Length: 421
Image (cartoon, rainbow, N blue to C red; front, top):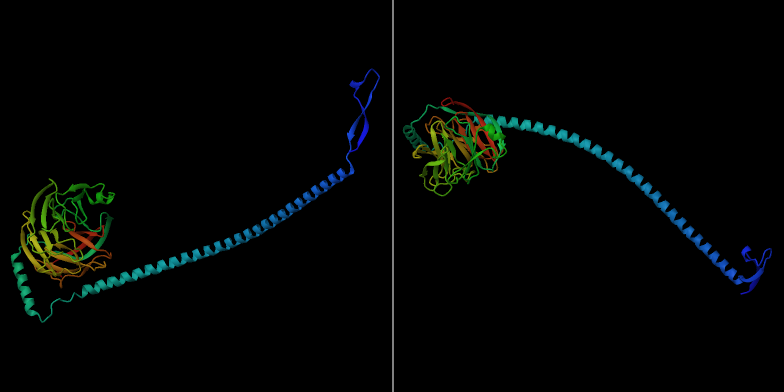
């Protein structure tokens, strides 16, 4: 490295004396040409790198701008397609609403036509009675049956002058749905009490008592009911309430009838039902072996035995002692029967199908032989495709209390006098 000498003027504080200056010299380094060239090259290289970086950044920004432009175009296209799809869906929904309204109108018209056909069928079936089950050639059998009926008629003496029989069912009212598919509900058929009693299920021991039908319908479930714990579980759904007492069949193989005082809460009497080898009285209600019923004449028992397992039997019971006063073998078959009820000494057997359809009274047996099945009108229940587990007649109200697949239903009857058929 070469050196160059230069003068250095000292500061005023370095003067030797007033008005005097001292000149000094000191060496300062000076870059040679090689170093200058090296620095110049490095500077050019740095400038070139900066230019390359700027070009790269510019290219990346242009690429990002292209992508943003592409995204913008795609978003616009998607928004346009979405608007078109929305318009199509709105149009399809409007068409579906129109088709739905058309279908509803068609269904209403079809329902009206079906109801008209059912009414016409009911009328035709009412006009054309059921064909007799006995052939014309079996005159001897018919004479024997007639003799047996005459004997039964001579033996039975009516307690009242009741001559009512069913003409038709006027109306149906569904009150509510509470409890299981099978059960029984009723009022006291022997008094004017407003209390309602619920037997829920086919093998329980708790009876529910409501103060009235209004209280029953307003109650959420069994919340407002008085629970009565019976001393024994019942079997089936063939129970009844008669003159302040609950009559029910004890669950078990003995078929013991229990008479329970609802006011005192005690068992007044009990008796084993005197029938051998019993079978379910209704083929469609297999849990019920004895169906107890009460009407104007008193207490009845509807049952069936293996000896005569094709048909239903009827027994008149003494409500005080539970003794059997008289029995009858009815011509009513068990097959496809679901329930029965008694009015003025006449048992009405209700039939259905295994796949539930419209219930109908298809067989009638009168202990006084004043009404026969051929003479009685064929009565169809209002259109409700269910299955009755119990039907209880109330003489004071002329209502049937029905338990249909968990629904509590009232049927209003139109009555007429016997021998006016």
